[in-house]
Length: 407
Image (cartoon, rainbow, N blue to C red; front, top):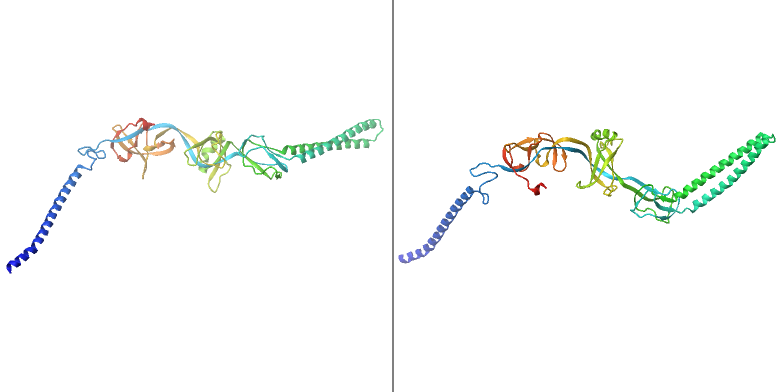
């Protein structure tokens, strides 16, 4: 019985022992693996991240800081134009709505919509037969009254002789003289009616009062047009053309005195995005009153517009040059940085160390330079690229721009 009991216990303990051995082996492998992983990570951390051995942000072997490579430019002087920017709209220099001066049937038009027409060019014709008939009637009246006037003058001459011979009373002589004056008045009236009829006939030929582009035809041939009320077309002068814009009343003193003394103010017109120059003109007029609701005043500039880049009712960005700063100190715009305390730049001294310098800026000179009112001297070098990695007193190395970058 004991032997059987021992055999039974051995059968039960053997699997348990095998399981325990497996668990012990697994725990030993896990401990070994974790221990070596930590060792490798520690070694890797001491060496630094892969691919960044040696320097890290200017750090040399031994922990010393090396020079920071930067690009720099010199502070110079230039004559800098001062501009006022505004929004404006293009207007035709002259715009004429053409109607007929006389009533009648529109017989024919001699223009094409959108055509450039010249001053005095025939545009349309009205039926003039009624006006021709009226002219002939007035000419007949004139001929009749001229004949009566001539007869009255001959009678007056005969009466004067009879009066000198004391064969005619003075009253008869005066009455004849009055009759001559009456016929003279009728002749003048007839002549005036003839001139008016000829003018009406001339008005039946409708001509362009200005040179410009013809608009859309508003009345077709065959329609009856009424004097001074039926629109036939519009003609707009665009060479030259006008641009109307507004400036704040605070800038009137920069413009009005000089303009009234004959000073020329240049005006540039750009497209809506401001990246394309459409034309260059000159300021011509300033409105005689300020808009009290906006505190602005209207100005008008005239542009030659020889290439037709400006079009009536087009919106444009306007730059009005009001002054020129002579020998102003200018620096690269890329060098000027903004902070909570204001604008600043990094100036490089003779030991190639960068020093933070506060500046006061002014007008922009072109696309890449800006006027420095205070804080810089001509000839100083300022950092343009690499500013983010600098601090006060940083040692720098000035890099030379490549030919491609310089361009």
